[in-house]
Image (cartoon, rainbow, N blue to C red; front, side, top):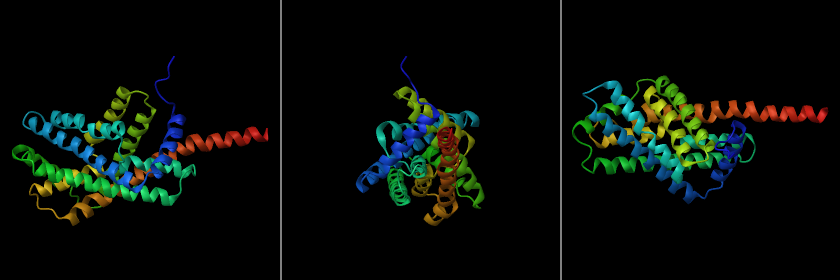
Length: 267
């Protein structure tokens, strides 16, 4: 019988190999694929705003659920079509822990991809705001969403960022496990839908939502966008996606395997 998915340890082994390949990408590849990832997440973000505004006057719960169902398309595009997403690349820590890459290679990828994600997201936000689609109830909702993302303290966006990227990297790991495209779609869909419904914060998504509102007329500065959202959310995303999941799963599977090997050798 054909195997349709990878077991947990196989997922980690595959993630380590993928992380090594990501570290070996050229600067141009990281920039181009990072730009596309920012655009893809923005596509999902604007589509979610569009469908949410059609249900705004019907039912608030249904409105939020509809937006959460559409938003994951962004990650589907990243995973299936191929792109470099900062939050997903937090899983490169697996490769670092296995000593397949060094800290400099990890830092090079993260910084380059993060900046490229930002440029791609902001570029799409500008194009959407210039397209005539950001008006009426769509514009009102976009501005409202962004206004609620300007936090007065560091803790809230930081914690929400941790919770968000735990789910995002788990979605990427599930997609890695999946051996066919339908399975990859569902692997991306459910965890991302869950984080949107829960109200967690994703740095790359916010790179689109906040500039879109700014271009649409919301009175926020770039300083507020970074200080009151992107910086704390990004740090939270790092804790959840580069800290919690890689450290827990690496120690659960690889440290145990190493210990078992040592015990067998002594026996």
